[in-house]
Image (tube, rainbow, N blue to C red):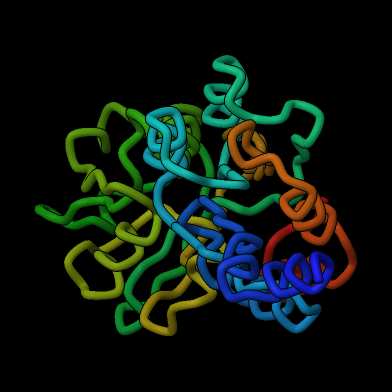
Length: 249
């Protein structure tokens, strides 16, 4: 009788719901993580709860106690932020993905440029246009963009013309809508929108490598969360990320 009671509890909707994991992931991972969640479900697991946003915003939410089992950041800085506060399980941290930094323009105003020191970015922006990218004060894509523009000798001229957004997808949206004549986003973001085209790719030596560290959080550290991280580093998820254009580490 006791065995049957335990079995019923384990099979109840409440127990099944308890196994459902929450993932906080950088906005640029939106499409890939939705694909991964679908595959995770096909493997017999509960669908993932996915929360997307700027890595900085998500990290601060975790610091403030938001429930998450796993954090996927678009740079090392915000993972370090949580690690320094002992808010991730340090032994689970893995750099799984990479990306390219690109200049995008509306597809109905196609342009191709060679991105090199001193290239004429202001000509692309026009007399009043703004350059859309994440806020360099805290958003990873904006931080990478600032590094690249400084390396190319363009920062001082372009900084007053930035349209600083809360995350990379918001920057992409401004270019999609024609509200900005150009933006700096990741290659994977450009690939999901037929309304933009890649005008050029920033050379790798102009900015820090775009890296995506993943880690289980201290508060959400369960065997199922660790199993998910193993899955994310495994062949099925790697194939999904590669299909979406990420560099698989």
